[in-house]
Length: 181
Image 1 (cartoon, rainbow, N blue to C red):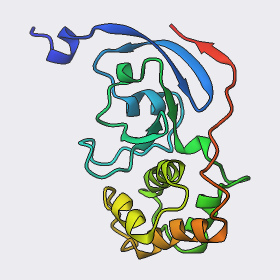
Image 2: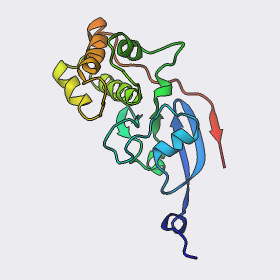
Image 3: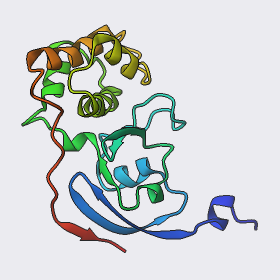
């Protein structure tokens, strides 16, 4: 019986990275995506949409830059810092962006929202006071079937308008180191 090509190339690699402030040392399949790595760690806010890097539902930050976790290999984040939606706030303590998305109706079904929040977090860290045109340009890379984008743009703009000197959303603090086989 012939093995599948994935089984034939099941090379394992050691990975040391930081995910949401936690240092992680583990072994991963060389072909494992960053999305599979974070979701496998219980960080299921990173949504699997198209799995081709088109929709943006899986957007996370790697060294403060938005990336599509479905098309980045886990091995590519060796020595880097990864942040998922879980790092920016939750139901009990939502971030300014999360509150703005709710207040401005920047979310409908919510499937794409984590990707937009992470995209906006990266944008605001790079440019704490983007123009509406810059916000529109940034969000045009992610897909949403429910809102029509105007409310998403307004959500991000409202954070800038409310406190342009507040700067970008904070990075998660560094925490304990975990080791896995």
